[in-house]
Image 1 (cartoon, helix red, strand yellow):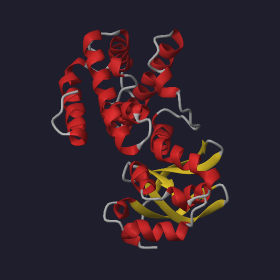
Image 2: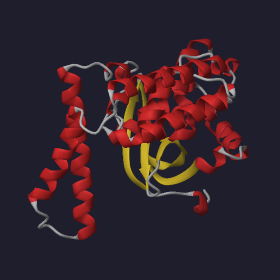
Image 3: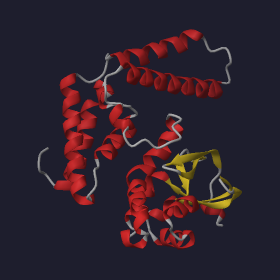
Length: 266
């Protein structure tokens, strides 16, 4: 295993992805990776053959890394991991006919959801796949609001811990935490976020992108497009887009749409 192409895992988790255990790794380069052998095993693919195919690919090869001590369901061993955001690209190159017929629905789930689930495992502590979760988060219910508040508080706590670590100061005042928590609460209650009309514009733009992308892939891309928007802007709902980010979000979606259909309007 090449030392120049290896990484150090900082955190490892086992994720239940529709009944298959996948190894997820947050590495020392701050990126999320997934165990290649576990994914190949779940899909009935030859792991060595897929590794060689990835190594020959100019883009995929940049995200393939070796790990000396990789925790897997079978124990700790050396192995290879693939950067999570490259999983859809890797799987798009696998012919449907290359897997058994009963595995094909699973291949589609991996293509559509695996990257997002691996990423979210480290962002929100989610260790299971739920295909409807992002759609449910768009509902305006007490439970959804409580969930979003809890996730915001978790994020705030992580930021505070990192701040204390950088400063080496165990005497950081409680007022500092309270001020930042108030800021989070204001954002969740509607202050400094997009208006209802702007949220509608964002939603319509995402749907246009999803429809255009779906024509190319032949799949339902709504969840994937919303997920990409949420990851890029660090939000859990398009309704929570910061007001100052509205123009940037629309530009991002417009350029994405144009890359798919040319200059045709939404």
